[in-house]
Image 1 (cartoon, one colour):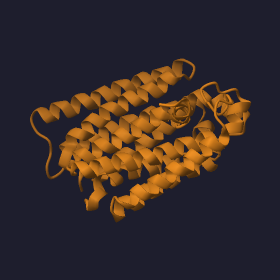
Image 2 (cartoon, helix red, strand yellow):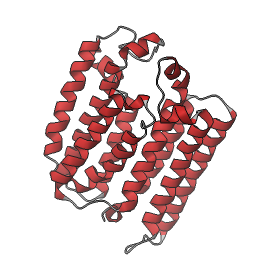
Image 3 (cartoon, helix red, strand yellow):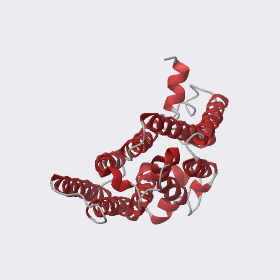
Image 4 (cartoon, one colour):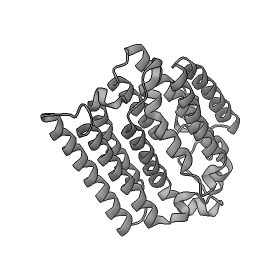
Length: 283
């Protein structure tokens, strides 16, 4: 791997990119799609997430440089803004092409998802509506995965879980950057709530997501039975404990990336539980 490729990957927000791609892939596999469809979903979502992450570092280059972000290759001058911009546009084009192969419903859902991410990068992040792209994008992610290849729509609880998870991701991801954002005029939804309330909303959303997934497992025409009930309850309790730990950190200490790691840990538990849901993901 060349140094330029490594720098571009570092500029793509690799953590969130991988997390979203894995989530989409697990949902597609759990829905019972053929391997080819699962791979197509993974590639389309990966391309879309790469484009969103790269666009963020391209558009925010001056701001990141002004606040001295040492984790951003563009801000450090290790790679040019033009290179990151070209990569963002290129991966966006790939995402469009791959989306069109997913089938009409999944294609529209994914194109709207990617557009929401770009809208956030382009300016919504500075407004009180900064949470909307996350609600839209994460709410549509189950639609992309489940409806791919002409499949059915996902169950309501899967869409709702995605949406509230998006709120959690948004609020926790910006907590460590509140001071830098304030210095450069970024006043999004979490900034207006403030540190404490934003953190509580984030982890409260995770708790709600855990409850929604549990309801999806145990309520309905085909509720899970036997050991599945135990696994569902254990997973829900695990998320609730992690979220409670997050709330405690928010209320007692300064914002750190540990908060985002707790969200990622909770999301991995939810991903496993969603994967075990199987056919229950389908409406």
